[in-house]
Image (cartoon, rainbow, N blue to C red; front, side, top):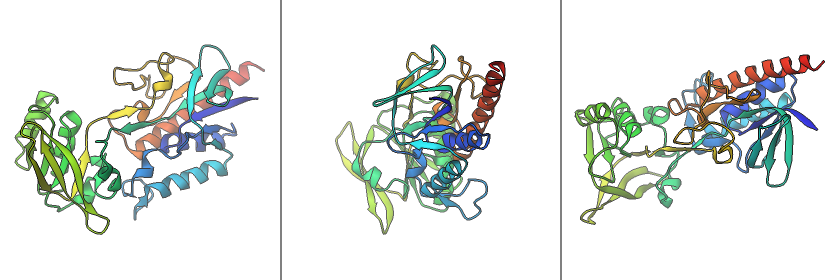
Length: 312
């Protein structure tokens, strides 16, 4: 059996694409990954998704979108894609157990935020620890201090953004200089609400379920001195890893591993489309991911209709 369209990934981008392609009658197959749902599964309240005036829990939003996609006929399998073959048609999409054939593919595998690798960050993830300042900054309005970990442009942007809500932002950076662009460094270092702790690493995030995050324990990498910074939140801004390893040599990737697209969702291969954070370094929002999933689905519809009509 040759599928009309296979959607790889099951976050907001993939699910939006599934809803649209399913409603068009293309009977899409979604290969969700071994753990379905994407980054929203690590998020608690989402207050900036249109249509939810009281907010919605990240897992609930994924659950609703999943049920909506299934309602219109999307079939889902919780398997990881390990390889693809776009050299000939129908395309081939491979998992460890099976090879699927399809006329069109929508890649929506997302990107994972890099983390510190310490147990306490996952204990507090979504409950005081965040990887998205623009998503969660407003939850910390009026707080005395939040910690931003990182030294690149994202850390600078996040820190300046967070000063809209909190009394102070403390950047903890492993080195004695930022790697961010000069303009972003200047903007950050001149902001009176931002303090920088150099040559230091976060060793532990402190807090309990009852209190939330209460601080971070840091280690000075020059003196080995250990100290504690009181804080009510921690924002990790140390980068993202796009889930594109299986696409190396198959599609164009930039130096960071993000898919290179044309007109946001198109690739150099007709019939292969892209949606969401797998190509988006800037927005990284559930709403924008869903929007690009819709665009990819509409392009897929046009492609499938044109190829099917030409074969008649």
